[in-house]
Picture 1 (tube, rainbow, N blue to C red):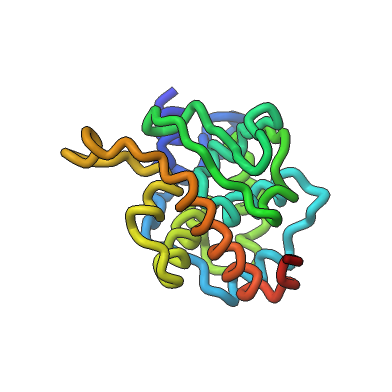
Picture 2 (cartoon, helix red, strand yellow):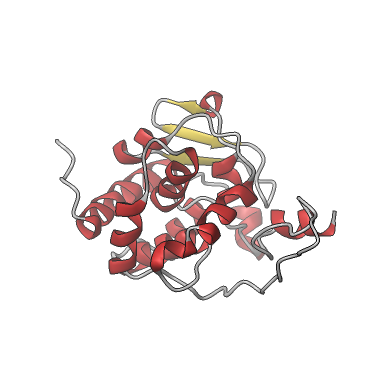
Length: 201
């Protein structure tokens, strides 16, 4: 139960007691500063198979900057048009996520365990790269957003980080229009990094 609690808050990568055997893998603390370089993102994208549900979820984490546990539990019912509404979130705040054309390609019913995503990454030996976790894709996305000029205010709204202090009391704006503009700019940058063809206008 303790590990399931820590898993939900992304303090550990997986629950080593889920399938108890004589050998229990060591639990290493998560490096909260790891981001993937542009070269690493390209390598990862090339290794991910669109026909594999877990691989698709990794792409969606990168494309939406949402928490792995939220992507893992995504259902088609949460999607209306270009918007994905997440009702159960870490901070108990409903989050509306704008799905860009590329993100919509990977949106749908997942229903996989969050630790299944981490386990696939681990078993794949991190796709030949230095150790990383699915949550690092979210941090990478946020870093790219900052680099291309997306403000901290909008970036934090996209990631659904809880507002603090007086702002939380008085600023009740939902930022839908701003999120849409920011996510379209982010998709353009991601496509440039990955060498993908630009979307048709």
